[in-house]
Image 1 (cartoon, rainbow, N blue to C red):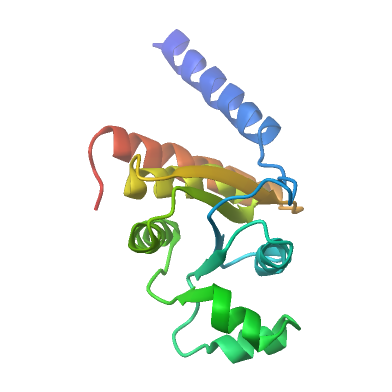
Image 2: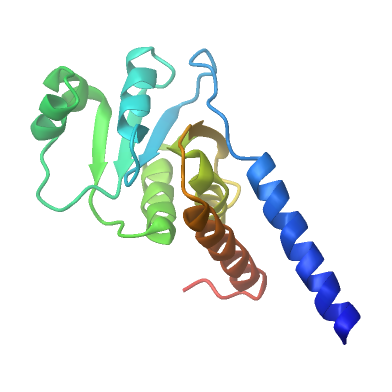
Length: 178
């Protein structure tokens, strides 16, 4: 029994080490996709998405998880971009309240627009779970590439995120999707 517990602790620690080593990196703006999806909740995410959209790395962008009542003009003003950019090329998703519902909201949007390639923009530490949720909701309907926004998270946040990732992965393996 002690060996089993020791092995589980070792596997957990090795997995956490791998999680840290493979935090998502930013992709070059030259890597184009049909669409960009930005998940709200972290510094630099929307800025990164707007920069990519202005660099023509994609045709359209979804900001998933926007608070109810927020208007495109308000975000354009806050991020100092033309309201025309929001009018033509940015959709605000206001249904998602967590990472799993970000995946569901994004999958519906991707399918509605028939996009085949999606650049997912979120914090580097959040990418693994966000991508897993989107892939679960989307299936094989589109290819997803991760574009991690560099951050400086606290160790507590990293441990929490790693545990959420493990628990959700197990839930998906067991077929628990709701």
